[in-house]
Length: 412
Image 1 (tube, rainbow, N blue to C red):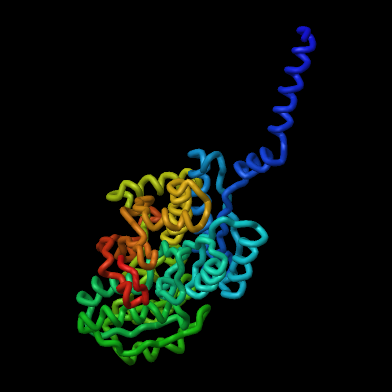
Image 2 (image 1 turned 90 degrees about the vertical axis):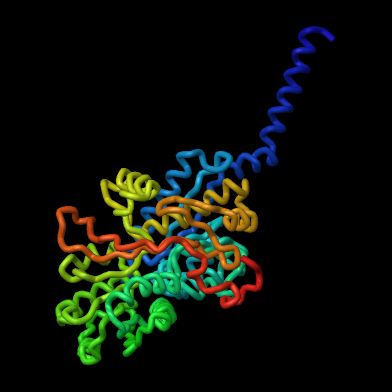
């Protein structure tokens, strides 16, 4: 074989190798590595909880950006697919189904209602797609609604109401009236307060229920006044809470009754103002002011400030961050985007992303975490400095309903 013939033969072999590298098999592998990890994020961008939902989106996007900047998973970046569930269970189910079947979402994180999260969970459970809920619910932990793919990053009403009751009831009296939004969140909060209150000798005078989205509470206030409770507990959320707090203040009920809100929202307090919320106390999953004592809170706040022009994250915003970041961390730990493998990794995760140590309880995938007890401050120089931290109830599985009570037969 002449030298020229040998060189020609060598070029043919190299060319054949290049052709093989560009074959459909190699193309599919390269395409899989470049496909983003898609996280569906259905939340109520419209409606009475829109302010909280928009903050969830901002913080969730921060988690995605941070993870991508660190290199993602095998070069694959994450993508947040935000959808408006309109605070409607049917809409939430439809949007979730679209995210999974049309948009090929790998995981679902989101929800801001006890009702919508159950419909989202049902869709994900049937299709074996991991769902991490970032809204309060007791039912989602129960065996009838639960699956291997169901996780609950948020506090639940039993834990929240219990922590607030254990702090407030011994301090402020023995009688209580509940003003309750008439849906799952409100009902579950009352149940949590009642259980804790029985052990503390607290008497319920009435549970007065109102429709979600109520603007005028004047029909309820004279009855509350006539009952003369030591405490008024407002089991409502978002705009409902702002309206009820303002009208209770204007009606003069604070003069003889302590006003308590189990989920005392940063966004509601900022929107409602210092005068309306003066003296109101309650619970929260997170307050940015914890940064003075919790290093991970300071780190999270600083990243949020840098990303959003000096703004501070809200409590529900922080849930959006942790809900997404925990799933992405589990992807890295599992070395996979398969929901079953990621679920197993998430069950084993111990994490401190923004508020101190957390972990998911094995039997129901409830995030075991602290509850922060706060009280609204008077007007200050800093518009964001709205709460005084009164106490922090540390993470404790004993404060949750037992696995047996929830219908789970496996050991924790």
